[in-house]
Image (cartoon, rainbow, N blue to C red; front, top):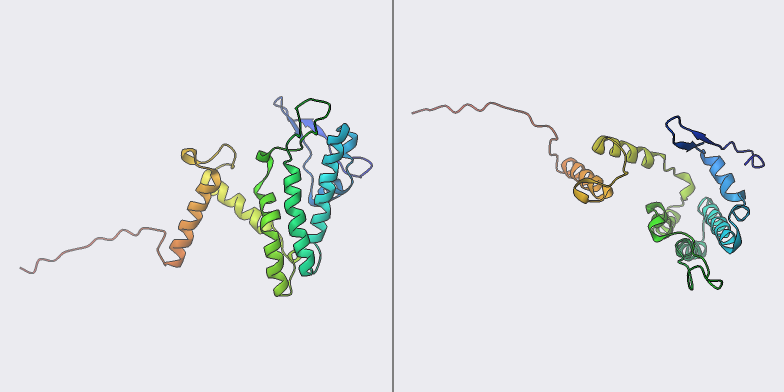
Length: 203
């Protein structure tokens, strides 16, 4: 880490738990590009993991380009899907045998961000290309902020631990969000105003 000029350390939080330095965007990119994973994870698995993240960095740089051809987008789409497949590649052969090819990560480790990366980014690139725009002009800061505010507002905490009534957290957030949009579109007040109604008896 020192060779990469990145400050990173593990430290005791004071409650018997270990924590670590939070890396900012530029440091993460440097780490993704240069960190020698194979020097810390021995054997073919270390090499495969290092190659996996080198490939991710290559795909990331493609997204950051100012313009794309149709061929580049198509190639990116195929490579991104293959990257996710490699990410959750299972162990091939008999576990712990000499001929076994160790897997990388679990399918459970695939995140929603990775799903968007492989399944939706190519569509975004095509739509933006038609308008003479590129993805590099946009930031996810507003999305992250909205996610943080929704979770804090609706759950009073984090997305860890699942949602209500055994439903996934994402389900609860989407239900809440859809109701808010429905009220807005149909001009339904989100506050109740109490009124007294007097009935006059003319008889």
